[in-house]
Length: 278
Ligand SMILES: NC(=O)c1ccc[n+]([C@@H]2O[C@H](COP(=O)([O-])OP(=O)(O)OC[C@H]3O[C@@H](n4cnc5c(N)ncnc54)[C@H](OP(=O)(O)O)[C@@H]3O)[C@@H](O)[C@H]2O)c1
Image 1 (cartoon, rainbow, N blue to C red):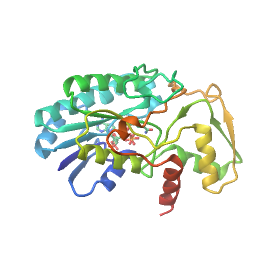
Image 2: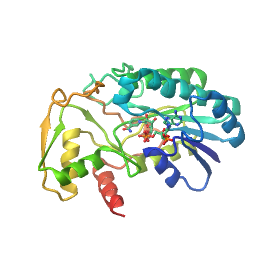
Image 3: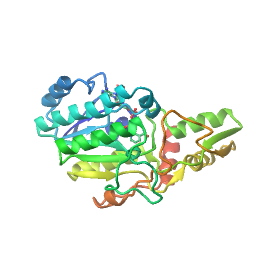
Image 4: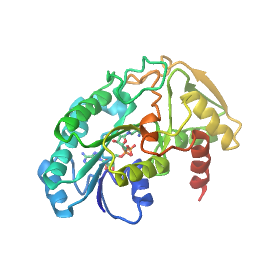
């Protein structure tokens, strides 16, 4: 199988490149192809003739998107459509990375794939519009919604917490947003499996077990053997430009339907902390 990954230099993309073995995989960063440039994307896809395209490229800075909606929609919606058009033209299958931020967070039970989208942020709206337009253009595409990524390939929540905990006596962390972290190694493995199974439709992929950011921070600090105090605070205290869903737990049922289950958050965090020391 031939695979092209857009966003190969990102947090997830680096683990997709590391984990994908036994197929011919080409990874592209924004330097190789800015997905806003439809002609360049089309040319590269025609050249590489992939069976699968994984679109992990995005403007994923949620607060940055709030400040620059034009860029958010240009990359996350219009760029995604450029890749989808190129995929259609080349007869390639497409797997697109989307987000829990397509939901408004008012539910109190895990979000299923057919729950109504109602994004509250620019980032969430850009992903929502991409999902809708992609499904119109390529009804057989696969959309993987995930959340709270952490991994070795760059800045992420556990990395930030560990760095802060090393230099502070106490950390204030929000305790009114509940979701499911996803270790990029486990997410990459699930994506590879989905491509090999020719998956279609929307699939939710995170590690199992939900938590708040505060609960996750406590686990990270304790698992690393640190004694820094972690204090729960309201998101009103630590206000950010983009609104976050208060509850965005994604149900694993859609992934389980493909015969794949994800490791627990605790197991993923343990491996992340070990991998960090290698
Ligand atoms: N991070 C999360 O918590 C989270 C949660 C839910 C969903 N997601 C989604 O999961 C996917 C992967 O996220 P991530 O955290 O791995 O992202 P990331 O670390 O920010 O990486 C983004 C990737 O996109 C590329 N990129 C950015 N703008 C581009 C453009 N205009 N043209 C081509 N490539 C461009 C970057 O390339 P350069 O390195 O060359 O800039 C990089 O490879 C994204 O679709 C994101 O929206 C992420």
